[in-house]
Image (cartoon, rainbow, N blue to C red):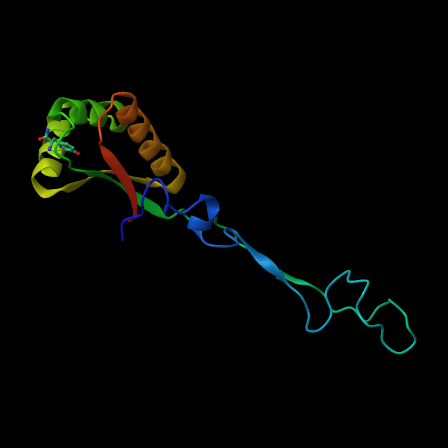
Amino acid sequence: MILSAVSNAPKGPAAYGAADGVLAPVAPQGTRAGDDDAPKGPGGGDGDDQVGIATKTRTRPKKPSMFKVLMLNDDYTPMEFVVLVLKRFFHMDLEQATRVMLHVHQKGVGVCGIFPYEIAETKVNQVMDFAKQNQHPLQCTLEKA
Ligand code: TYC
């Protein structure tokens, strides 16, 4: 699935999955910790009948999901401009950039690189902004790797 850079791209940490790194506290059945509105047991006390709160913390942080940055072909953006983009934002040399540009030109789509979500999103925005500034219709999107 291709996620549009403009409208459908996953936003922020949700892309990593919920509760990344730390698992949410598990409340004992029926009674939430520190819940003053919870019904009181016999005697009305707010006392020692609390069951402990189980928490689990990861020792190793989860590695972030990776996203492909895809470049799309169009009929108007000059080949030289695409090569410049690949050199400037993806640190390719002339030969590599030319190869990727020709691949996109011939096949319609190509991978510029694979990055953690926030870096991939930044690259897409940089490419789209740069293309717009130069009045080219070049499109760049994200796809989960
Ligand atoms: N198809 C374009 C042309 O013929 C070149 C091009 C290549 C445009 C790659 C976009 O992502 C692209 N001028």
